[in-house]
Image (cartoon, one colour):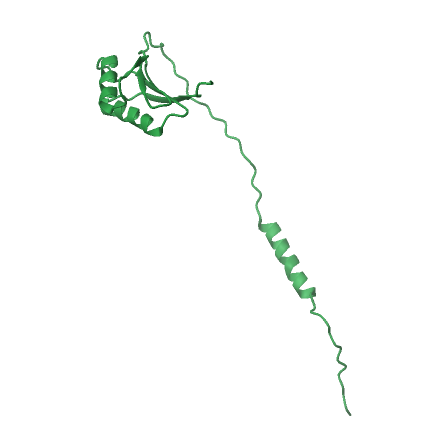
Length: 139
């Protein structure tokens, strides 16, 4: 007897096992995934209790113009040197370096001018320093 196998010519790849594996992976990832909920924190911030300061220290303001020139408390300085700025700050502060110092720079002023003012304040020992900007004057 002669047994013959009937061969079927398969013209493509059987995708059924591949689809089964993909569905199993999909189910696996869906089951193992944890979904996080956004949580909102409630903060109870401390509040200060006590008397307010009777006489807050007056502030010193350094203005930096667009060209890099300085003015300390409304008085323009004669040049842009660090020593001139330091002497003007020490004269206005009268040795009270714990007073707040505000550096207000024009929006188009060079960064070097702001750094020079910060350096002068740091060398003199100012500890309360604020930096602000202002928009250039419209013409």
